[in-house]
Image (cartoon, rainbow, N blue to C red; front, top):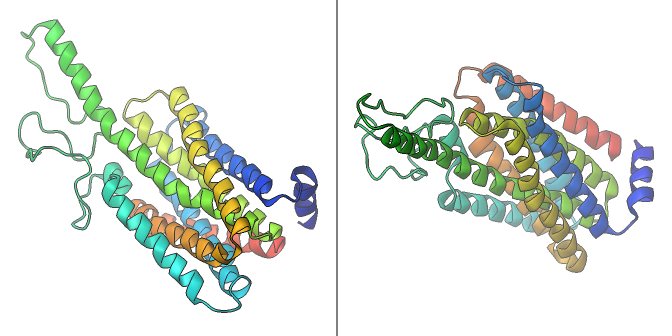
Length: 317
C-alpha cells in the first residue's frame, strides 16, 4: 500500500491543495460511475439497493472515526477532544438546519412523513384522498402513481396538457431529491479536502478511497429513483456526475485551503466533516434501508462497509 501512496505523491505532487483537487475529482468520478451502472444494471432489486446503501453507510461510519475524529483529537489538537467535538456538533447542526431548508431525501424516496420534518412537497393542504391530490411519495417509485383518469370525451389537447402537468408533478420531487443528495455530498468533498490539507497523505488517501467507494452505490440509488420518475438513463447519469463534481471538487479544494492556511482550524474542520457524515448516515441512509423489509441485508452491508474501511485505514496508515 505504501507504493500507492508514493505513486500518488509522485503523480500529483506534495501540494495539499492540488492533492485535494485530484481527490475531489476521484470521488466525483466514482459517483458518476455509480450513476452510470443503470446502463448495465437496468432494474436493481430493492434488496440489492438496501444492501449497497448499507455498505455505503458502513464505510462512512468507520471513516468518520478512523480518518477524521480520532486523528483530529490525537494528532491535531494535542489529545484535547474539545475542538474536534465542537466541530462534530457544528456539522450535525448544519445538516439538521439544512434539512429544514432542503426537502428531506428520505421523505422523497419513501413517502413516510416524519413529525420532526416539514412537508417537503407542498400539497397546499390537499387530502391525498381528494381528486387531483398529489401523491405524498412524489411518484418516485411508480411512474403512474398520482395521475388521475381523464374523461374519454375530453378534448385531446386538454388531456395532453393534463399529462404534461402530471409529468411535472412527478419530476418535481425528483429535482428536490437530487438537491437534497447534493447537499449531503458537501461533507464528503469537505472531508477529502480536510484530509489532504492535514498533510497526512496516507490517511487522506484512505478517506478518499472510502468516500469514493460509497459514492458508487449512492450514485446508483439516486439514478434508480430518478429513472423511476421518468428521467432518461443517459441524461441523468451524466447529470449525476456533473452535480457531484460541482459540489465535491470545489469543497475539497476549499477544505484543503482552509486548513492549510489556518492550521488551528484543522481539528474543528475534521470534526465538522465527521459530524455531517454521521448525521447523513443516521438520519438518511440507515432509515432508508430499513423501510422495505430488508433490514438484515442492510445491516450486513453496514458491517461489510466497516470492515472494508478499517482494512483500508490499517493498510494505508
